[in-house]
Length: 197
Image (cartoon, rainbow, N blue to C red; front, side, top):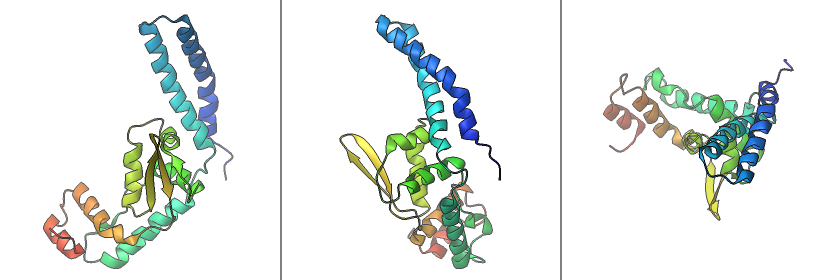
């Protein structure tokens, strides 16, 4: 097992420049001049802060999230058990296996049963606008993730690490759609999966 911590190394690399960028932004704010330099300083500091804080949060997470991998493996096994030989193998591949999906799941799993602020999840993705989409994709896998909002702040809660297999037919349809239904026509696949046209 390696003692190497890529997120820790990234944090150490980004931290000095981030400190300088934040100090520069603070200096520009205090000078109270509303010009392009203030906006540029803000944009630069924002980008560095997003990257640095992402590394900082990822430092606390394990390199691998075994619960996520186990859940995906269970989904894949159930897909094959139900549909192997009837649905093309290309449609029985479990999607959404990126490191971003895994890290988001890991943060949610760390606080399983408790609400996690959406802002923390966005930190994991360096403020990517696609964070909510990635959470929705975790739901599509069958992981029960509840969402709520309070005073303008969004929250997400992983209710269980056990996926809901009732999502498998719609998941297979999504994979088929991504493959442009080349291996089996959409209508035939819907009929086989028991999905209304």
